[in-house]
Length: 102
Image (cartoon, rainbow, N blue to C red; front, side, top):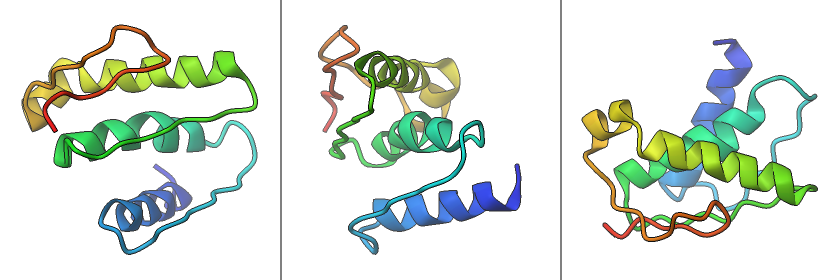
């Protein structure tokens, strides 16, 4: 992990606790921001607070779907379940799914 990844994680933590209401992260491609922001962060935040909701948007519907699928994989992974407990998801589609625990 690079120092800027820690900065991103700290900024996302502030979003999760409500200290920051709006956050824009601009970085060059291939730096890991999409994985952190669009995939790992929603899975972690939903594990901590099952009532949290996220909307993912992208310039490409296919890319948004891919990120959603990866976030869903994190949420349903053995590692995530071991840390946060099992989450029950209401939809099998990548485009729209939710945690029914919240």
